[in-house]
Length: 94
Image 1 (cartoon, one colour):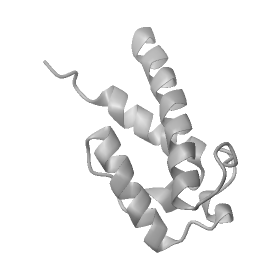
Image 2: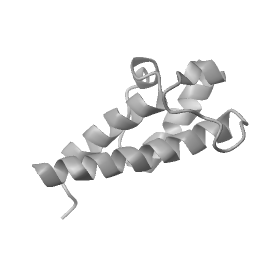
Image 3: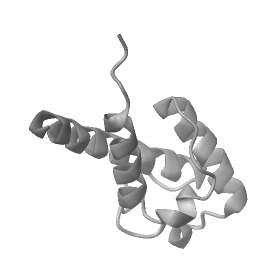
């Protein structure tokens, strides 16, 4: 159980960093400009760009994401935490 939590924390950190980079790229912001605790909408993320971002994220994590996830988890930190939890809960490939 404790190992899974450590894994989720590592996953969360990696996903958060990756999401910040993708968001900056999608919104044409300088790398490192995205604060994971600031709502993504504050950077100009609208519904069209959110769909594009989610498609990229789905390809990265390997599973479908609820289209409302960006609004339910409005910051990169909260979205990364949700995704890390879902990834950690998935059975390991055999």
